[in-house]
Length: 207
Image (cartoon, one colour):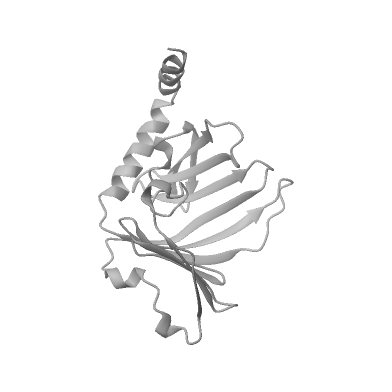
């Protein structure tokens, strides 16, 4: 009974305005057959010092995704995950298990709020002349490595403009979307690692 009451009170305590923003954003992404995005990212120390800004790109189609970041490419073809490190010319292969999928997977970022988070609308701001709504999410589970996640959603398009993940030490990683495309034509092979394009690559099979 105590657990039931806790669960009910947790639902009732959610910010309805924040929930409306998140639900609209989630429905927007779920309606897309696929999407692509270019982004920049950088770390910010607990004292507020910003690190080097780097760039990357992402393509998502259902649970499949291809993520390019500095020095690394990650492929999820729906069955396996290939993590390729350019510097060492090595790729690690693991089995993709949707039941164990990371909550911060690119395929999950627009549904992360639905389980295990308390959320609230913390304000609005203008970016490049467009109105955006800012929602803060805090994990319900004590001892989580993540202390806070802040999503900034464009009010008109309902798409994510940026997000900031803060860990338990106070260090943050900030991602900013610079270019976004909905319903790109992406073949299934696009999400598979092609070893023939990387002569001499060492394949480490961890399945």
